[in-house]
Length: 124
Image (cartoon, rainbow, N blue to C red; front, side):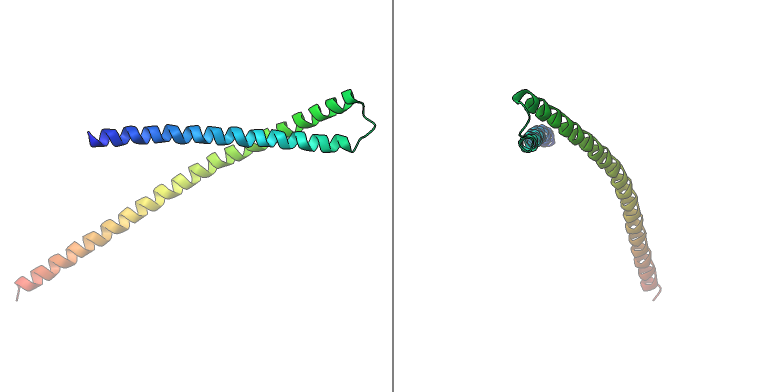
């Protein structure tokens, strides 16, 4: 019963963490969009001859271009993170196997030496 409860708590925690990550991603993306808008306004401020309609168009295109670039960059980062996860997982599995093999060899050697010592003690 206890293990079942722990498992459900772990699943609930996992859902909570996922929700937190979603909120964090949402907030980070909104900050990126706001930064793009701010930079677009700064850019159009350098062009005082633009009409209000032109200014709005330039800002809209600037924000769209900047957010498209940000989205592409995030996709590349996510892809690379997935690749690294696979590489590190494979490396971890390899190291774990090696560690288990060495531990088993050391344990066998210790048992063997103990048996030799016990047999040597019997022969006296």
